[in-house]
Length: 472
Ligand code: ADP
Ligand code: MG
Image (cartoon, rainbow, N blue to C red):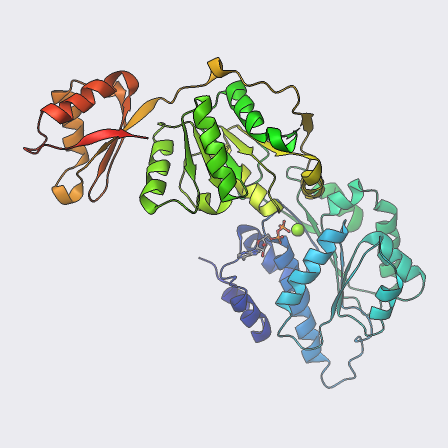
């Protein structure tokens, strides 16, 4: 396992990493950090959420510390010019990157990190420049405006980062980026130029050729690209969300689907509604008892329920096999959460589908996601969605709970044996069997449930009468 200790960062950086609880580098960071720290020009293509910000943040700040150490005896020659410049396509990203760099630089003296972007008055940004920042993070248009006014010099620049470079071009910033690069080339020498892009299988080489010389290109696929997941958004009225979910489930007929809600109460209500509609559905939210949660997960992963309605928190880290369909009852607040939700389908490269319901008030969140995704999530109208009760897919199995487990010396083999020999349940009617300390669980095809329950009532297993009941 690689650790950040392998990179010989300065103490200030190591303690910031500790404080931020970043223990091991992500796969993307492992793939590019060594090259970045060697001072090479590098172009990195890795998907959203893979930790690209930290990769270039560490590079910028370590170089800053190195040069501070060098210039301690000399006059701090470059201190009135930015040491590093990060170009970002949007204000939101500029602010986010600035924040992350500030956290990382907390223990480094004299590292002002400033965000500049358009859409707001330029004057306050100009006056912020009077106390010179070590790092400037900004959108190309505003940076160009400031530089053209002669308020920004690139003389001391050591690192230039083009973050979300592909997106920057998509958004029409090509001229501004070209202008800035030319200005930088005129004023500074030996600038390390780093380029980051999230478009998987995209045009990293051509981007690199456009902005770098002899750069090393690094492409990382850590399995979270989600390129094989078909994403759609449906625009619905806020009070028609539950109906839309039922309609989508009856249209797609998934064997397994997770519906993500933002709040516990939404989970409770949607679960009840879908149950009334006739779906095999379980819920997962924070107000449930531990045993209720375990039962829900068991029923869902044993195909005794097709639909799981859950909050993000309740579903986090759960080891649930890949599902056919993810529905976002409402869109999540941040792309990270969205990416995690969506990643529940299409695991291991299988095809998956993810549908996000939006209304007028949360459409802006989708626009924000699209700005960071390799391709936009298409939006359809939800008005035409219809729920067909006769198209509900039945769960494959019914869950049977047996009131004995390992503590009562019951094993999987005992249950299997009793089902086959005593109840004559054919092997193909027996699904997942799970034995915990005091209880056991067996997934049984509907047609064999009756004789299963009868068997437990009338005959003994391992010489003991065991109580069994349907688990719902
Ligand atoms: P990208 O720019 O590749 O889309 P970000 O740099 O925004 O991704 O990082 C995504 C998230 O991962 C952030 O919340 C960040 O704090 C977190 N992160 C980055 N590196 C690590 C790490 N080594 N360990 C844990 N979390 C990390
Ligand atoms: Mg990023």
